[in-house]
Image 1 (cartoon, rainbow, N blue to C red):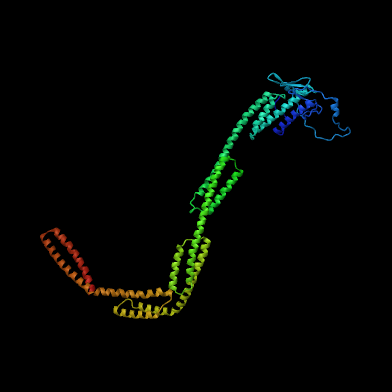
Image 2: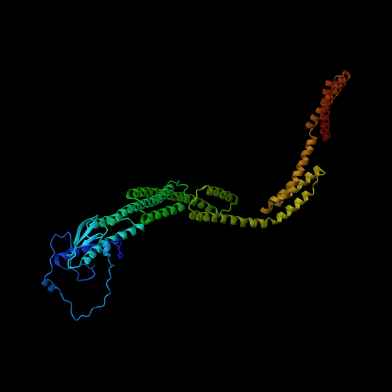
Length: 506
C-alpha cells in the first residue's frame, strides 16, 4: 500500500501524542476487555491485544457488561456533527506488507519475514489488518509533515529528534506498511536535515559576522571620539554622537543577534572604557573652563572698576588715554563664557560711553564758544594766501609775522575745523620759508667763494687741455688727440654747470 496517507494531522507533536494515547489505550483494552481507541469506525469493535503483551486475551464476563452504565432508553439522540470518516484502506496493497488470522492476530511482512504486530480480537481479518495499516498511515503522515517542514526550510530544531522517534516507531513493528520505504524516507530526511542545518549555520555565521562588524564599528567610533584632543574637540557634537552610539549599543543588545558572552563582554568593556575616558576628559575640560572663566571674570571686573572710576572725570585728555590703556588690557584678557563676557563688556562699554558722552557735550559747548574765532582765522588765512606768489621777500615776511600775531590772539577754533585752518596758514608759511632758504643759498659768501675757486681751477685745466690737444694734432698722434679731446669735452661741460651756479649768486 502507499506510504502517504490522506488523513489530515495538525502537527507532528499532536500525532505523536495521539499515537502514544492509542498505544496506551490498546494495552488497557487488552487487559480489561474494553476498547478505548477513538480511531475505530465503530464503538463496539473488538479489543486489540499488541503482539508484545505476554498475557492471554480474556473475554469480558456478563457481569462486567452488566456493571456498565446503561443509556436512558427514552432519551432522544442529541444532534452531533458526524465523525470524520477514515479513508478506505486498500487491502490488496496492504496484503503485500501484512496479513491477519481468524483470531485477530496480525503479522508484518518485511523482506519476506513475518513479525507479529498485535491482535484485534472479535473482528474480521480485514478489520484487524485495517486497524494496524492505519497505525502505519499515522506514522507516514508524520514523515510527510516533516518532509514539508524541511522543504519549507523551517528551523531544524528538534527535527533529528522527530526522525529518531519515527524510526523507533517503525522499528517497533506495531503497524503494517512498507517499513523499508518509510525508513528510506527517514534516511533521506536525515541527509536533508543535515544540509539544512549546515545552511542554517552558514546563514547564522554570516548574520553573526554582520552583527559583530556593527558592534565593532560602534566601539571603534567611540574609541576614536575618546582619543580626540580635549582642547580641540567639539564637545557638544561629540557628546551627542557618543549618546547616539550608546543608544545604538543598547538597541543591538536588546534586539540584535547574540554574539556569545565572551565576545559581548569584551566589546562592552572596550565601549565602556571609551565612554569613561570621554566623560573624564569632558569633566576635566569643563572644570578647567570654569576656572578660566572665573579668572577672566575677576580680571575684567577689575578693568570695569577702573573704567567706572574714570567715567566722571573731567580731565579729558588724561581720562581718554586711560581708557585706551584699559581697552588694550581688555583685548589682551582671556575670554569668559559668552554670557558672562557679554554682560561684562556691556558694563565696561557703559562706563566708556558715559565718559565720552560727557566729553562730547563739553566739546560741543567749546565748539559753540570758538565759532567766532573760526571766522577770524578764516579771514587771516585769506589775507595770508594773498601774499602768494612772493614778489618782495622781506615785505612778505613782515606781513606774515603780523598775521601770525593776530592768529595767536584769535584763540582756539572748534575741534572739527582745527586741522583745516592750521593747514591753510601752514601752506603760506611753507612757501615763505622755501623762498627764504633759496635766497640764503644764493647769497651765502662761503658757497659763492667755493664756486669762484672751482671756476678758476676748471678754466686753467681747460686751457692746459687745449694746449695738449694742439700739440697732439701737430705731432699727428691720433691716440693723444682722442684722449685730449675727450678730457676737454668733459671739462667744458663741468665749466658750463659751474658758470650757471655762479650766475645764481650774482
